[in-house]
Image (spheres, rainbow, N blue to C red):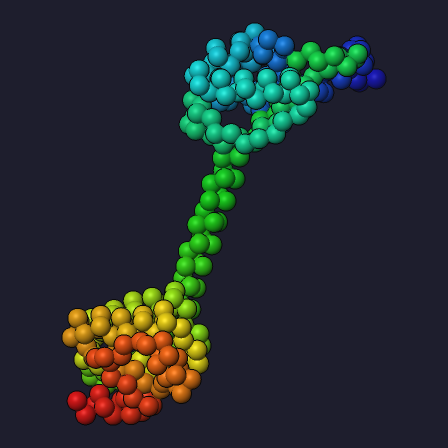
Length: 272
């Protein structure tokens, strides 16, 4: 028998088990602790003391009110009282200020029972998820950035602004025009008129088959807003169905030039 094996054989199986369990909890990435019925620490693993100035041995007998600010200790106590009162495990996320900064923890607390089933305390496993939360926040921010970029691209494609000639812009509109899209049309058109100092802006609605009073009123408002920038809006491609809707709704098109086709609207603008 080797010297190492002889040394192991001098310990009882219970002592061996205790040593293995202690190595297990100290090797855990989570903070592990056990408290008595008075919420005093009976045991903490080595990971626990990485977040404070106390040693493993000095933590025994202390409560959270001895080592953390009162408001933090009160919040921890509320959760532990709930565990004791319900005799059930409790898992939750918490944000706790520590000597190494504010950390996010995933906490699991559960009652500890003796061999008769009576509750003699509680235990907890607290996992630092600060880095995970940061990565999640960064991932969400990146997703939002990508979505915003894609939305901008879709808006540009759905409301393209085309330079036809010096001082003449055209915006062909296709599909339904919702109030939201009408607002985007207004924003894109006014920005283009200002940037290119356009004198004419052609709004071609050939591909628009339906229009309600809100959208029609918005288009008229776009024309009036364009005039404030020194540009004239020419509405082209109004279908018979849209014309009937506009007449039926009593939309005031005073001051808005209308043309049957985009081509005739371009000719009109170029002649002017």
